[in-house]
Image (cartoon, rainbow, N blue to C red; front, side, top):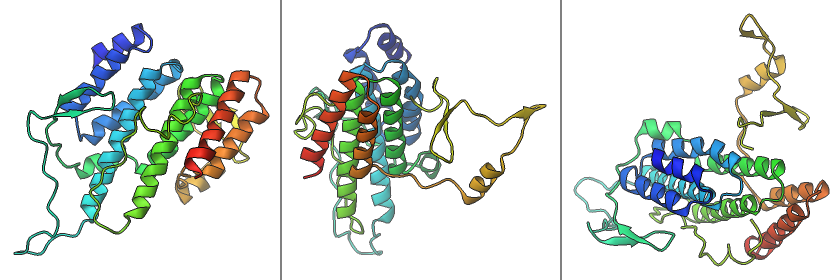
Length: 290
C-alpha cells in the first residue's frame, strides 16, 4: 500500500498504481469494513491536494461502492427471516465463486476470484457510518472541493458518480424494503450509459480548509473556542446543540443539487466552472430526472 501511495504521488494520474491498490484490497481486505472506511477517510487529504487526478478519485469511488455493498449486504442479512428448525430455507443462497475462476473488474481486467469475505462484526459496523451518512459526507466533500478549486472537471465527474450511485442505491433500497433481497448495489463504472450521456461533466473538512458552519449558514474560517490554560470555554449554543444530538444527515436529492448548481452559477467567475455546472444540470435533468 505504501508503494502504491508513493507511486501515485510521484506520477500524476497513475492508473497502474491505483489499480494495483484496488487489487490489494480486493484480495487481502475484501469485506473488511474498517479497512475500507479507514482508506476512504485517509484519502480525503490526498484528493484535496490532487484535485485533477482522475485515477485517485476513481479509487475513492471504488471504496465508496465497496462500503455501500458491504453495508447493504449486512443490513439485508440482519433483517432476513431465519428459517425454523427442521425446515429448509425457501431460498438457497447464491453459490460462491469457484476458486480459480476469474471475475471481471470495472476496468475490464480479469482477476482471480477473491476469497469469500467474513461477515462484518458488530464492532466494524459500529465504527462505520450508515449508507446515507456516507453519501452525505461524500457530497459535502464534493461541494467543498468544487467551491475551493473552481474549474476542475475531475471534481464534477466525481460528484456525478456519487449522485448516480446514491440514486440507484436509494431506488433499489426503497424497492426491496421489507423483502429478502440479496442483490448487490449497482456496479458503477465508466461504461454506464447514464454516466456517459454528457462527457463534459464532472475541501475536505479539516484539510487546509477549516470551515465551521455557523447558525446563520455563513462559513467561518478556523473558528475555535477560546482556550484558557488549555481548557476550552464552552459555547452555550454548542451545549444546547450537543444535548439535542447531531442532526440527521441530509441525503442528496434533485432539488438540493439544483440549488447547489444555482449557487455556483450565481457567483461564478470561471468560464470552465460555469460550463461544468451547466453540463451537470443537463445530465441531472436528462438522466436522473427521467
